[in-house]
Length: 434
Image (tube, rainbow, N blue to C red; front, side, top):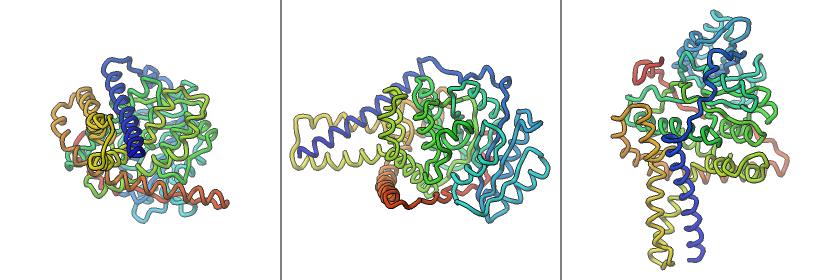
């Protein structure tokens, strides 16, 4: 029971840290000073840009993202704007679509990969090697950037301290299913509140792998894209901060995505994210704690950012241990368990945001009616416990294998593409791209 008590105390402490973190973000977003990510220079600071589009079997959406880039409000002459569309061994018509746009637009380059690693990280690495410009932006195939998106994303790069930039992801097919509506709530809280508050407080906004950019010179200094990580975006986020650069979050740089529409697709997506974050936590925790550049608050925020998918695992462990405590005896502090339940309930409804964060994000977006869907997030919450626990165990296995391979001098190959199928229905449902 002593061991049970110690574990319960640790769980309570960690959950309290997450809860306090959400309250701080909530308060800052409502009443704190809001950074504008140097948007006064958007449209005036126009450096040369390379946009990388990694694609594999994206015929349903490839034409849409390429078309959006052709009408982008950004100068395209004399190599000022370059698009590298990468067909990564697709078996559908993705390559034909890319070739069609490349033949009619001189700034679009069609790259067809049939050798080398088979993953998004490998495709990004190949695109980066071919890029002619220092500023590199990345969009996923199903994303639809607004016409002003690029000039808003590049504006913060005028600051030499900025190594990475991240824009806001907004679901476009929100009316397609209950799942897309719930993910709309989750995205709203995660970006409108979490990301903006991190930026305001000089913490660690997360680069999400799309709708963002990095300086090629910075990427080279930190070791390039990590092709063996499932979450290469979180990995590059942490390595950027460990090496002294910062990330700017641009809330106004909106880009619209096609959300997954059912639980089966969500399960694969969430498992991939959870394993990737856990890999980063296992690989980078020590470096964050020891890093002399990061502040104490940045170190705490970095650890909490990487550990967000372990929260459901801790909750499950807490519930199991509470049952053990109930039947086999307890200590004077057992009353704290009721506080733990409230902390957990506050912190875990939804995946990235708590009740207050979602509420304030909906208010800031002036979309009050959608808040009625918030109770449905409880179903996602209970499902997340099961999925994230499995992902955590899988992460431990992968990490142990990596350590073993490193010990015997065996080089690990890059991860294969892990993606959700796109339907291309987002043009006719939900929000309209501006």
